[in-house]
Image (cartoon, rainbow, N blue to C red; front, side, top):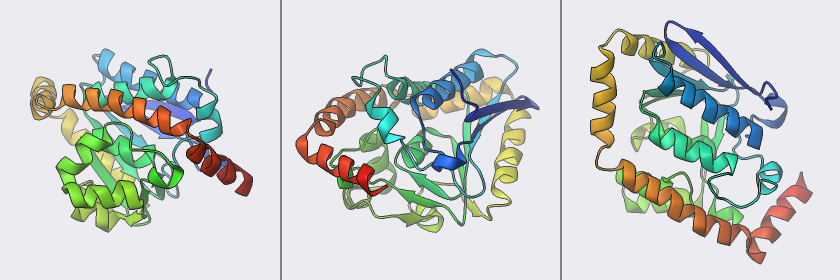
Length: 249
């Protein structure tokens, strides 16, 4: 059941997917995860679609999981909407471009690891606060991130969990370009339009070749992370941290 928090539109063979739940800082609920999964399936299955652009607003990409909703979703198995989204974004065949502005926290950062081009505004704030919540990385982050940044930087990001800027993200190779919040979506759209003018088979084959040695490994990492994530989530320590987080709100 959709709540209009994920808005999709199509123009010039580009599927734009907008996260729109500003009252909750674009936090992702279970129904939003389902809508995101369906949008990415549409991208792959519709021959008229070439590329997706995922974005939020000029002030917020997503504050991450809606924790209360996430914890009502039951076991982290393949029926869980969040898990379905992780597997879908990791295996989508057509290109995905992200246009990020404002906070991109938790899954807001890890989903970018599965995008093919990422443009971020200079007001972007990234954070992987897993250890701070008594949790471990998800979305294949434990495999992809150290390959991009090296081990020591990845450890700093997922264990110390400090916030970092678009410039920091650019320097470690997580994003392609930094711009103003006003321009970031049009820069992403320009890149998407460029892709639509290239031979489709060449684009999708290039994506597959770039990922051919790592896709199975990433999917296996997602599965391994979920086992550990669920164990940690159910631990007394994590439950205490999360309930104090709710009480603070």
